Every structure is written in structure tokens, then in C-alpha cells.
Length: 114
Image (cartoon, rainbow, N blue to C red):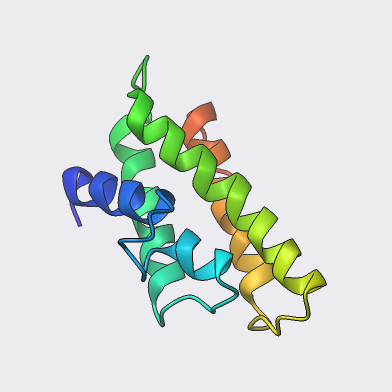
């Protein structure tokens, strides 16, 4: 995966549009589990974006907004679903923490996901 592909993928996953019914945030908002491999691809894309932008002095607004929404709203939808009785996959909580740490790492310029 190259930077352009990773960026586009993250923007698509982090933009909760009802037209993209398989987008990560749309699925969580609807109380549906992620598509198999979706979280892995998100984490891979986050790592690629981190590596490409590690020394960048500025980030583009569209990407930053998508990253923020991806990390913040995914947690919000997870908690709302949990309170509504949705049975999430056992590792999703930890995956959301990894996503949030990866996004924070992109903003900080230092990878701290482990």
C-alpha cells in the first residue's frame, strides 16, 4: 500500500457517508461489526501514512479531519452500541485503542502503538 492509497482508504473509512455502507464508521454507527480484515487494513494504512508524514511540518485538513473522526467517533459508536446491547467482537475494543494510538502517533510524529 502506498501513501496515496492509504490516505484515500482512511478518508473513505473515516467519512461516515450513508452511500458507503461498508465504511468502518457507518458499520459501527449501525451497530454492525467491521468487515473482516477492515481493522487490519485501517491499521496498515495508518502506519503507511505515519511513515510518509513522519517528518512533515503540516498535514492536510481533509486527512486530519478523517483521522480525528476515525479515532473519536469509532469509540463513540462502539460505546453507544455497547449500551444498546450490541455484542461486539471481543478484540474490537483493543483495536479501537490501537487506531486511536496510531492517529495520535501521526499527529505527534512518533510511533507509539505497541
